[in-house]
Length: 196
Image (cartoon, rainbow, N blue to C red; front, side, top):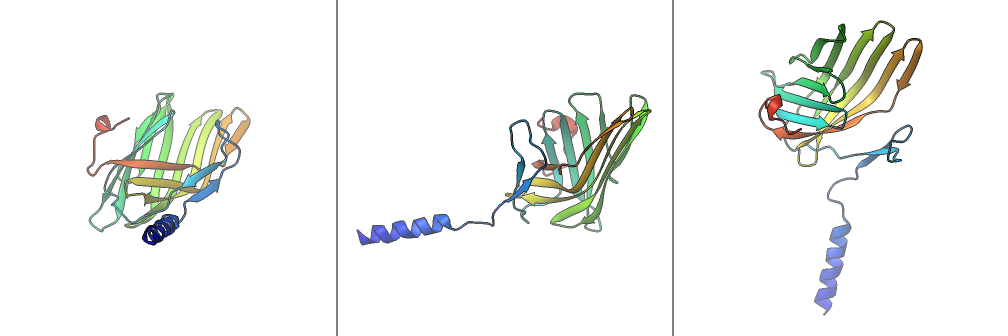
């Protein structure tokens, strides 16, 4: 009987020891539609690799992020954006830049790495659209890291501002987006192959 008590105590103790450090909870300004004002950020891991195809989707947008390691050993990225509520879409080159037209006006986008190594990607995000008396501008700095078993990529903005101007009224959002991409292939999959 005593052996079972010791075994039970050992199992209870083992179940209370975390396998990894705690996840981070990030407070966001305002509340979302469900009444939440926090985002839980998973712990970073060095498991897995950047190379491959990653996707993120919500009800408004779809992103594909293709990552590869260049000959110098640095990660490079191509990103494709597609709105599900408007005809807006673009795809960058491996330099992270895109120029496209929307409603006949030029739009520029750049996701540039300032630091890129085996475990962390960090850089800037700039998206600028001008439509005469209306405009949309997103600027920020981000870091990306793998989480879980290495098949989740957390893109976390450290600074971010989104401004939308309609005539003379400007509305700004400063909530820090945190997106979790999932790895769907170790190769550079085609857009039409992606599981959206």
